[in-house]
Length: 409
Image (cartoon, rainbow, N blue to C red; front, top):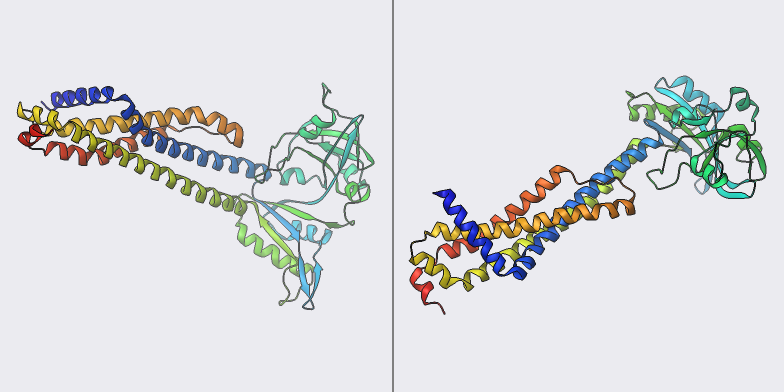
């Protein structure tokens, strides 16, 4: 009996929608826009999270970066902190959680090979940098200990730099000469691609050279002093505890008094990732709220159209009640119509989201996909909206008096 009533109500509701296709389409469009907004925001949020994880992983896991900073001296004068060989040796020797520690000295310069030239970064470091930053060598090999200790002019190039300097080379340019800010270096290896950082800079437009070569041939800083020290910790290390231990060690090395401020800072890659995720979460929540508001507005539109429909079809409702239709049949008719309108809008929203994701993926550079849960949630929400906002018109239609309804002009 109930199935027959549902079938009859669905047929009448569908006939009513087909009889007024423009009105049905405009009514469903509110739900369509809301579902589209919600599904796209969810996909963008998930894609942003994955992108941040990938890019932060490319920086190196369990990574701490130590940099010098200015401090006040005598109340008004500033003093620039320094990181030295002694700091590097102390970190390796006295902090058991340290897997590897490498200095970094960066200089931007003009790179040239043959007729090709470009601007990129040369980063002077030691062989431990490959461990700290999880760099892999795709072709050739890293420099030898002897080349590192003597400051030999050898370099490993990132894929972007190789493409810019050797666009027509069919093989890796191992053994080729590259001029960096006027000094000639020999290419001994090609780095595996790492992509962009979480801040959007290209990690592949770079040349790694021995630290002594950077400080000698490229004039990047004083011997034994560094712009950064990068430290890789063991996976089980307590990052905050290690940072406190490092702070005490470096303060002692720098001869700082208890009242003196630190002349260095320690940055944790994991905390940077968490901060970026927090920003993404806030933005996603705001956009999701806007999408939900669109759904509510669409639901109100459905309710308004259904109320108008009840008024327009008052005589029809009265005739059905007069020939024996139960108020439940009338209620089901309008409730099903509201659900069908909302469901149609929801399905259109999901289809539109699927069509919109590829261009968005190309624009943002994030891996975007519409998860099954998003599709089910969007469809379910649209049905709930239909029921919630179709209930009032359905109850009003079911509550009409047959005699009064038939007398309506």
